[in-house]
Structure formats: structure tokens, C-alpha cells
Image 1: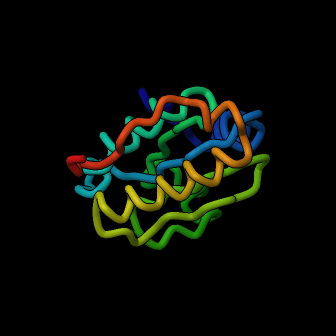
Image 2: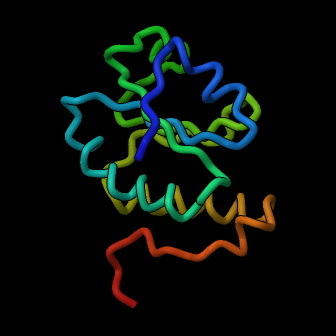
Image 3: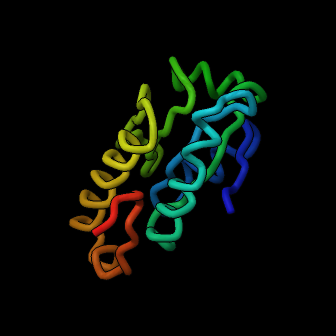
Length: 128
């Protein structure tokens, strides 16, 4: 389940979080936002408690949308200690997102040994 965050709760849930947070800026009318949701849920399950996943309705939280200069939806920000570590935008579909999430996973597996021991879950539809 994705925690829904608003302008009122953003500081506490994201900027002050003790673990990195993947923020998904989305909107109800955004088709790609709905398409990538299963991939994000798989990523969250794979990361366990190493990375938190939250969703922000960009339409209802205009101040956050402006602050983070959203150009397109969905936009994903990986925020750690209040600082943007990764910005994922303008991806065209699942494959682009899958590659970006894999990059994040590899980066954090080097930084957090517990994460590297986590069970690996294939985020893609590729058959091995």
C-alpha cells in the first residue's frame, strides 16, 4: 500500500524520514501513473523497510508541484535526508521505469548492506 502524502504531511513523512523516500507525483487523470503503479508496489515490496514509497496528488498539492518544478506526470523523486538523490521524469513506460528503479536498487545495495541481502524480485515482465 502506498502512503498518500499532502502538503501538510510532506515534511514529516518525506523530508524528516529516517529512510530514503520514493515520492510518486501523480494525478487521477494520468494514464501512465496508473500503469506504473504495479511496478512501484513491487519495488516497495522488494525494498522492504529500506526505502519508503509515498504518493502525492499533484493536482491537489499545487505548492509541492511548484516547489519541485514538475514538468510532467508521473514524476518520481528519491529523497534522502531532505535532499533529492534521483529525479525520474519523462519516462515513456514500464521499461524506462524498470531501468531507473534497477539503478536505484543497485545504488542502495552498495550503500546499505541489509538491502543487498534482501530477496531479489524481478520488476519486469521479462522471462528468464
